[in-house]
Image 1: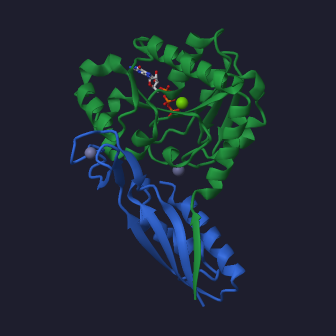
Image 2: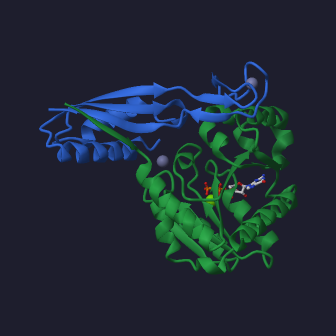
Image 3: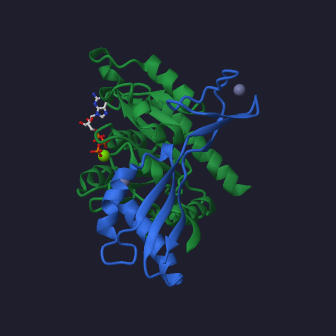
Length: 113
Length: 222
Ligand SMILES: Nc1nc2c(ncn2[C@@H]2O[C@H](COP(=O)(O)OP(=O)(O)OP(=O)(O)O)[C@@H](O)[C@H]2O)c(=O)[nH]1
Ligand SMILES: [Mg+2]
Ligand SMILES: [Zn+2]
Ligand SMILES: [Zn+2]
């Protein structure tokens, strides 16, 4: 929904680090994206070309690594993958688990030349 | 050449949010982020809450709106301090907008700050404002299947107000199904069934909220 603003934030982060490292060109941006964030990577890629026009990041490939939603059951002391946002532990049926991943949205690294 | 960055896309917002949170804490103010779809009844709930808690709790309101000031005008008639934020098209409030609005409020004189977010079930859940309490409204007119379509807000909120229950007989909205879905997503969620039209269910909400405000004040004294 706010993918344009988000794309601008990513570009800001990428360009700051590209400049700090004297990049002539950014080739690739690796982004970790949690399933629960609701961000649509297709839209981010769509805005990317527009937002980075005439910068060293123009034309850089956006590589999204999707992070599944995972919860932790305190009773079984075990992690489990969440399907359909149902926090019921598949082993014991308890619904008291903490979500431990799925909200990530991190610029992990860039490849520059 | 590979450069490690490890910067969160929402980090800038999170930093300002934690400054806001510290301000609320120092001043003993419970900040409540009120989120829902357009027309779910946010402004109606703010009005009703002001009526029920007036004289007991000192309340300020921040009204987030894409363009108009209609809601802020309504709330002003209750004689409470109101700050209007026009997001200029943005579909959610963010922490920096709140920080700016706080410059127009006398925080030490408040117990409760109600922030009406922009009508939207998606974005507001991504942007921490520094609030102590996240409250969402789902109205009967929207259907009981919304939690699965908009999971983030349902999994992040502390309270769910099911509003417009006066319309229950006129739709196939099933409160039981909704409760079961929400319990599996967010077992700690506190649920109130209310009608801002008839007033049904609202006293329980107001009492609960007043208790939360008192708890926040007590924490400040400790
Ligand atoms: N039947 C019924 N109508 C309600 C109830 N609560 C609010 N409404 C009506 O729903 C409409 C929208 O209410 P608002 O309080 O303006 O909703 P909102 O969420 O603030 O709307 P936006 O700020 O535009 O996103 C108004 O016409 C209200 O009178 C209710 O409990 N029952
Ligand atoms: Mg409103
Ligand atoms: Zn948004
Ligand atoms: Zn278990």
